[in-house]
Image (cartoon, rainbow, N blue to C red):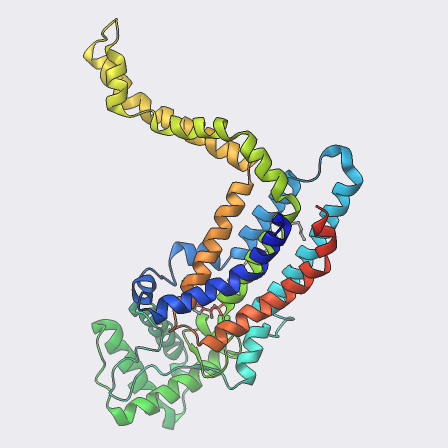
Length: 379
Ligand SMILES: CCCCC/C=C\C/C=C\C/C=C\C/C=C\CCCC(=O)SCCNC(=O)CCNC(=O)[C@H](O)C(C)(C)COP(=O)(O)OP(=O)(O)OC[C@H]1O[C@@H](n2cnc3c(N)ncnc32)[C@H](O)[C@@H]1OP(=O)(O)O
């Protein structure tokens, strides 16, 4: 099988296989340990994955420009960049309309599918036993944050309640206050729980509405539940992996050849990072002309971190400027790892919601790169 066919196979299969692997990990009972490493509010998810199209755009375009065809072939180089820009623009528009919004005031496709299949922004704060509903926000931190927000909105509109609502209003505010102060279950009876939930739901939709997208619902402390919710994470990680692998086809050979040609230079830069241990330096200070104790301590304890920082800076600059394909591959591995975690985290989404997120990204990127396959094969 030629390398081009291999690459084609990897490009087409890596995302579906990663999702399938996640399901197999769950099926064989190893999912719990992996799910424990998952943090919705963690740095990787909040800063990288959720803003992943920005990072993917940045690194992808830097590689496309850095590894563009040799200056001599300007016509072909310009044509390739124009083709990459066309593919990138299609995928960026698709990313936007599927996850961010179709138009001003119109939610993204993933939320429209959800709403039209019966989904809603719920406020089931208390369960039938009068405790805070565990499924309401999924974590204590998020629940506390959501309840504080609901409490502020109810307090702000306390005077807007008519006589009948006043009683419900004070009971709702009181119950939420109990939970916020004691972080335990409020003294809400089962019969009262449903009434309080429905009152909070109506108030939040009245004062903070319309809550018709997952972003608005999340922002105003609601729980996005009840419809078919295509997984935005599966969609986004698949779209990013398919884009990076697709463009790697354009410059991958040249980038990896350049990396291979400088392998010893890079290896030397990496080993120099570790060549600064204090004991190693202390031994070297012995030598023919033994140094004073103070001078040896300076050489052993102060110079090594400085030398290590300088070596790290040189290596970072070399990779970022001369071998950005290393950063692209690191991003690719990160997105695939996050895709695996999302597939393993069965409590976030059903399999069908994963599959709809996957297909939404996969079909568009498949068509975009299949259309350019002939041009890409010649690269
Ligand atoms: C044309 C120019 C050419 C030249 C370009 C040159 C250079 C380019 C340089 C720069 C680029 C400039 C322009 C490029 C164009 C565009 C730039 C893009 C800018 C951005 O990019 S600006 C980002 C704005 N956008 C946000 O700021 C985030 C908004 N948000 C979302 O867009 C969604 O969020 C999404 C889609 C990320 C996920 O959608 P979703 O929420 O539906 O996800 P899903 O339902 O699957 O997950 C259910 C729950 O499980 C949790 N979960 C699942 N898997 C998990 C895992 N593995 N680890 C931890 N938690 C996980 C989730 O965190 C979630 O929990 P929760 O939502 O409560 O956190």
